[in-house]
Image (cartoon, rainbow, N blue to C red; front, side, top):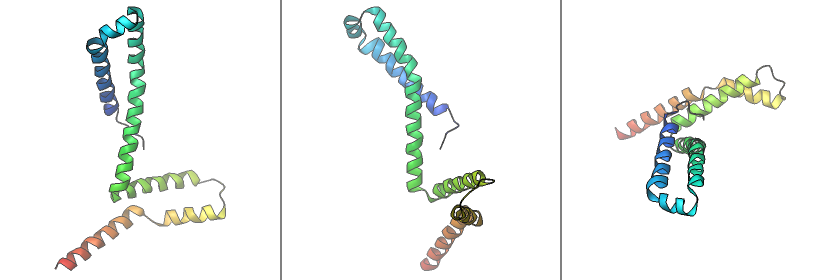
Length: 135
């Protein structure tokens, strides 16, 4: 699932920039300048700063995938909502397409059920049964 919020990516990019700044200006500046020339040192710094945005993008995509995985494992509501969105996308894509009879039957089964409402009904039923047992 794609995230429309750029704030986490920007924060990751700022943190990476701070780490690069610390490493290149305080921690290993003298060692890097002595092993590289001053010109190569600054060129490496510029290249790393440019690559910083790409690294932040990769870290952000991994973060989104990890959150999605954790939510799919731990939250039934999230899982139902995700599958409901997937179902709607497939139904929308399949309209006006040539499909096999088996695929048409599956699409018809999709459109007959509402996963979110079914999930809420099952959850409410479980809560009521639990309440009855406690009484």
